[in-house]
Each structure stands twice: as C-alpha cells, then as structure tokens.
Amino acid sequence: MSEPARWDAACPTDRRGRIIFLNGTSSSGKSSIAKELLKILDVPYFHMPVDAFHSMRSRREVGPDELSHVLRRTWMGFHRAVAGMAESGNNVVVDHVLSERWRLLDCLGLFVPGDVVLVGVRCSLQALERRERERGDRPAGLAARQFEQVHAHGLYDIECDTTTAGAVDCAQRIRDFLPRQPAPTAFEQLRGKLRPDLPKAGFAPVW
Image (cartoon, rainbow, N blue to C red; front, top):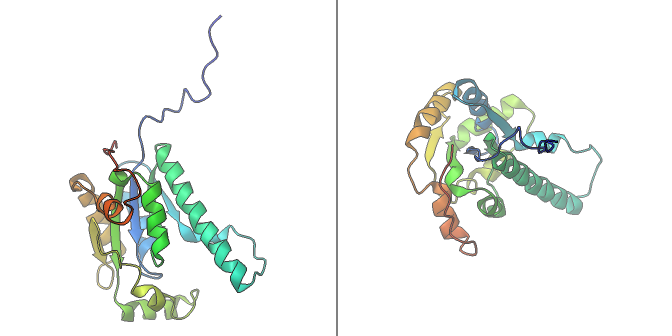
C-alpha cells in the first residue's frame, strides 16, 4: 500500500519570493506604480498595500489612546503577512509608509534582506499637497507630516520622483533595474547599521 501524499507535496516552497518595497508618503503614487508593475513584470506578483489592511478593520469608534495601539498592531500584522507570503514563495509588491522608525526596524527583522528591493518613491511637497486636495480622501496635511521622516533612513536600491515622472515610467525603471540589483542590497546595509542585535544575514536571493 502506497503512502498517502504529503499535504504540501503539490506546493513546493523551496524558493522565497522577492519583495519590491515601495516607500513614500501618502499620495506619492506608490499604489499607481504597484498597479503598473503588476502589468509588466515577467512573473506573478501580489500587490499588498497597507491601506487594504486598514480597510479590513471594523468601523467601531475608538479613543485616541486605543487607536494608537490598534494602528500599531495593524502595521505589525501587515509586516508579518508580507513576510509569510514571501516565505511561501510568492513575489510581493509592498506599498508602505516608513514615517515611524519602528516600522523599518520591524521589517528589517522580518524580511530576508537579500530578497528586498527598496524603492524610494519621492515627490515634492507642493505636488503632494495638491494631490491631497484633489483626492479628498486623506486628512489635510498628512503627506506634510510624513514628509521629513519617511525617507530619513536615507538609503535605497532605486528611487523614483513622481513629481514629474508618471507611474508607467517609474514601473518600467524598477522592472529594468531588477536584474541589475547590486549586492549588498539596501536592506542588507540597513539591517547591519540599524539592527546590530540581529545575526548577520547570510542569505542569497533565490528568485
């Protein structure tokens, strides 16, 4: 009698997924770039925006003190969901806002740093404020409050400026960069600098 097949035998996970990590303020164009990337990348990718995780939460009113804890737990869950997808072999485009230092530190401890392409999505403050007014679905001044901190770590694999470049052009630049990503990656360098408590990552990309 033959042995029953393993439950995971038809789903090999001997490869990790790549994470294209788009970081920028609200209204900087990250989601638009992510949508264009999914159209032109050669292999399947998932777009995982943090806004989707916030939208899953119930609409119950919470006080300011409780809200800060709820938001932090949401971000932490989001990070771990991305890590789980990549660990299972899925390629992911992450739409993120590193406006609080702990968010980057958390990601540095969770993601395999050699598998991350860190993309800075920049935009002038004037253009961000104009987009906020036109969108009408963001708190006034949100991008301005995030503006100084979101790029404070100062290191990227590749950057785009959506003040003048469109989402299609930015996506094409990122796609063309992927085969040429240098080592060490920005995430590897940031992990060594900002998370000395972690063991050195001896991981090599396996896409």
